[in-house]
Image (cartoon, rainbow, N blue to C red):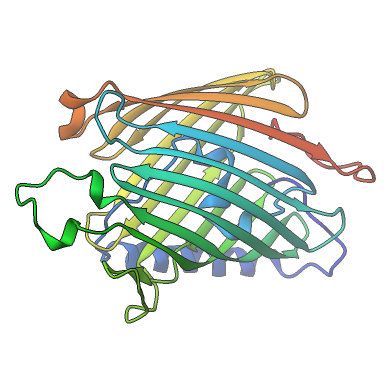
Length: 321
């Protein structure tokens, strides 16, 4: 978040900050009226916002590669298992960022895998920037109904599997300074679906009512310690709005320990290690607080991140930021 171009003429910072604050307040009001159904989500999303907000692509002028694996609700048959590998970059002194992601998400008899591309454009100010991003790609959706056990053996609904391809698209906005950031995104703009005849239905084109509002701040407590609180508000049609509140404390830019609370869902502990200036690993454990608490042994998640600075970039921030 800290790498900012200063080539363009700065705007009036005070007036612009008030405009950004007004937009955030309006977004919060609109989110409070949205009903939601939650999507599968990583607990360590704050270290790679690309999956939530395409405007994050190229937020630092370097190559960023992140791999994540999440094994949710251990001990519960058919529980979600999610994996992804993403890459994004921006050339030094460039306003354009881009990236790619491949992912796989399995839940019971359903499996979704896909490929997404990201593009962002950064508008630099004196000590901050505003970025707009879009994403697009394809996903493969499969439902193996033959593996289902039903009370009605001849139910025609379960006589054939579903296997088809769907388009994906998303949009996001990100505003960042050297110490804080705020973003708003709609990562699922399309509501296309596949019916039991394996035909693509586009009767529900339009925003899928997935909204994400994110923000964070970095406090320098002393020469060796940083405190980084962050939060995310997520809303999806069909369920209540859900909030994540996160705090991680970094020591000597070498290792960090944190705690997160996901409303009506889980309490999360996480630890991060900066192995080298380019390599970071992370682990998190979710303790379930919902009605599923008695049916699983929690959720494990692993993260691996590699950042490769540009050869000609003398002011790029390392992954510790």
